[in-house]
Image (cartoon, rainbow, N blue to C red; front, top):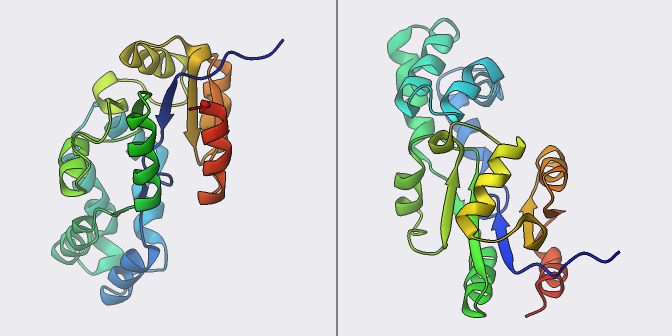
Length: 206
């Protein structure tokens, strides 16, 4: 049986609409004598990351915990804090091709939502990136208290879009998120780059 045509679009932020240049973190690590990749490795440890993605701790507390973990390799707490603060000042870059696509889709009368596992800094990030007002809804895991790929997350996203799951097309660059969305009843596509836009336009049929 054919799926219903999607009438709403749900996009991931990092890896789809926002990109991070890995050279920035690498430059900070070199400057402070840290091992390659250690900033991301420590920051993304699940026991440290999960509480901030579900709103149990603030972004500031999460950043402090990363600095604490780096105190020894950085040569002391002051150096560690300085390194982490410098790394965190870079908030990424908007993929302007994807943003143009978002505007195109919304211009066709299709709702577009942002679905992201993020901290309480998300609204400030969207403002910094010039994305405030560019999306119809923003679904932030730290506000919901639950993160992708939980079915409750996708249920809340569909409610925010006022669209049943079968009518929502979700796009993410991570397999686990795509699988979670499909399990929750959404159509889902793993983002591979700008060449995918042709497929997404066809799936939305506008």
